[in-house]
Each structure stands twice: as C-alpha cells, then as structure tokens.
Amino acid sequence: MFTPLPKSVTLAVLVSTSVFAADPVAGTLPITVSAGKAVASLDDLSSRHSKVFQVSDPDRPGAWCWFQDPRAIVDSSNPQKPVLLTGVVTYGDQGSEQRGDIDLYWVELDSVDREGGLVRGRFEIDDRLQMDDHASPAFLIRPDGRYLVTWSKHGSDPIMRSKVSLNPGDPKEWSETFRFKEANGGVTYTNPNLLASWNEKADVIFNGIRSRGFDSNFLLSDDLGETWTYAGRVLDALDPWPKDNDGGRAYVKYAGDGKSKIHIFSTDDHPRVNFNEDRTAPGPHLNSIYAGYMENNKLHRSDGTVVDENLLDDAGTPPTELTPLLKDGTIVGDAAMRRGWQLDLKTGPDGHPVGIFQFRADDNPDDHRYFYARNDGKRWNVSFLAYGGDNFGASSELDYTGLASVDPSNPDIVFISTSSDPVTNTPLISSATGNRQNEIFMGKTEDGGKSWTWAALTSNSASDNLRPVVPAWTKGKSLLLWMQGTYPKFYTYDTKILGQVIEH
Image (cartoon, rainbow, N blue to C red; front, side, top):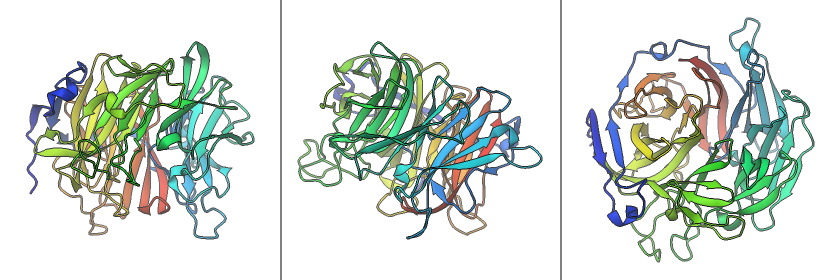
C-alpha cells in the first residue's frame, strides 16, 4: 500500500560509503523530498498560453524515441518570426508509402494564435527508412544560420545520415543526404552538439551515437556536418553476466554547453537487466544513474577528475567510474529506488547541466518516481520531482513511462507526462475512457528544485499524452511539444505531435 511522502523532508542517500569515498561531489548526497502542491489550472502558473496546435499532419501518425537530442529546435534569428523544427518516424501499415518515413515538420510560431491559421509544413527527410521510432532525427542550427539534421536506423546498418538546409532560416529546401559509414558496428541514435572549441579546433560538431560494443561512441565534424570522422569510444558497459544476450549497453544522454564541454548521464545498462556483485550471474543489482563530462578528448567525473585521458581510441570507461547521482537500492522517502533510467539532460543559461531521471519504487513498475538533478557549478543537487505513474505499451518495456523534459532556457520549469497525480500518487483515471491515462503537467520551482508547484495541461483524456519535449528558446517563454494517442510498441503506434506556447 502506498504511503505518502512527508510534506518536506531532507533524507541522506543510503549507500555503501565505499562507493562514494573518493567522490567529494557525490559524497553522502542529500535528496530533498517534498510532496509539492497543485494549483487549479495552467492560468495559475502562466501569464498567458496559446491554444494547443497540431504539428504533424493529421493522416501521418508520428513518434520519437528519447535518446536523440535535440529532437526539436527553435530558430530565433528573427525574434519576430521564430521557427520550430522537429521530426518523427511516421507510422504506416505494411505496404504503405509512408511506412517508416523520416519526416521533418516546421512551424512559424508567430502564427500559432494568428487568425487565418497555423503556418507550417513538412519535408520528407528519408523515404521508408525503418518502421521504428528509434530512427527519429535530431537537429542543430549552424553558425551560418543553416540547419543540420542527423538520423540513423535502429542499429540495423552502420550508416549515420545527415542533411543541411540550403539556405539560412529556411526549412523547406535541403541538400542531398550525406552518409557516414561506421566501420565496426551498427549505428543507433544521433546527438549533434555544436561546440565553439574542441581540442583546439573551432566550431566542431560532436555527435554521440551508439555503435561499437553496443556502447557510447562519438563522431566529429569540422565542416559543420557535411563530413564526419569516427572519433572514439566513450563508455564500455560491463556485461551483466557471461552469455547474457540483453545487457552490456549503457544508455547515455548528451548535452553540450556550446563552448567546449559535453555533459552526459549514463546508466549501467537497460533497466530490465540485473546482475550479481561480481557479474557472474543474474542477481539483485540494477541500474544506477551516473554523470560526467567530456572536454578536449578526455572524460571526467563531475568534480573534474579525469577517468579517461584519451577518448580517441576504441577503449571505453565503465559508467561506474563516473559520478553517481542516485544509486540503485537507495532509500528515498518510503521506498528503495530500483532500475534507474534517464529522461532528459540539458544545459541551462549558466552553462551548467540540469536533467531528470526516474526509478521504480521498490521495483514496482506501477510506481515510478521522477527526480530532478541540477548542477550549480560545484556539485549536483538532486530532489524528488513527481510521481511518474505506471508503464505503458509493451510488457517487455516496464520502464516506458510518459517521460519528462526541462526547459533549458528556464530550468525552473519542467513538463512531465504521468499516469499518477504528481503530488499524491493517485492514479489518473480518465472520465473519457474509464482507464488510467498519461496526462501532461507543468511544474515550477522557486528554490532550485527542492519543491514544486504543478498545473495540469491535459486531463480526462481519451488517449495518452506522452514524451514531452521542450527546446531552448527564450527566458520567460516555453514551447512544449508532446505525443498524443496510443503507443503499443516502438514500431506500432497511432500518435500525433501537439504543441503549446506558454509564457510564465
């Protein structure tokens, strides 16, 4: 039976002292736990907000995975006419002409509430590539004002694909597709980040991918995405136990500071994997969450300690060498946190990383908990964020929750998808369906994440509202995107992309 968390409690993380003995950043990292509070409506947390608008075409269901970033960008080069770009893998039945298309959508955001309708469009990036949302694209804006988009299949070929827009600020015309072949492994996910400097080179694009060893690797481009070079392997996730066919892959999220650093969150493995202490057989150990950063071809813990002197080789570092943010088995509030998975990682206006991750409470797939982690330049501060609810979709993916996203331009603002009341953990039963549905909530903090105020953006929905994404934009204004519909599996879904502009 669920026992509510205390209204406001600060608890020490209960872990083996040997884990943290050499890590003053993590130390006995305190977790702030607060039940938060709810307000009547979005009007109570915003000064104004637009109507909800549809980004994707009505006849083209689309979805994205969450290990490609940025999945959406806003071009504010003309502040009076900001433009959104995002992309999806489009669903189609067997034999359909749109099955597995990689589609880019663009919206002129100044037209959202304009009389006469939304100004938007679609460009087909790739034709029937793969019916799998892991193939969704990622974007960035180049210094010359042109756009870069990168994408790949779900590990079934060694190709990383990219295109560049032909004209600055114009999402309607694109180059041919550039193809980079990874010589030693299938490619999954792309994460392009522009850095002003990397290893004494200016304007380098770092692109985190999964390839060799089923692990985190990276590509570099010194011509703004038209050609790529394999650079090296970042992590080497330890096999859970010999001959295990499911593990040995760390999940990684990347966030560049635009200058010289790439921050990362990592897990031990997929959250369904378990292992014993010496990794010789299945056992009680599950996923923890770790943090670090890359700079000038070196991998660091969050306190600056170098754990890999040379990233430009085929050898990777175990994720356990990074800074632990929350260890598997840690008691927080009323339960042990099990099977962590990261949901979001961004860099704020101060250049410091901020993100969200989840754990199961007492290994219960119907009771996920979301945590907010924010680095102040000296250490990570971790706090309980909200109740994340149960899983949705396939029974093989018990940690597919609704997910959450930080607004990188306003890190005190987050958006979550949950099937539980974020404050009380009461299941959200929709009056439209009589079933538990995922709804979208906006959260706001005024104390760096220690406590949160929540407002519902959707309620009593006829289908799930999932996987919110908030791209960088401007102070005091958030652009929220999310998937609405049904999502049985990552290769079968009927979801559309919705958006809303919120001022706060």
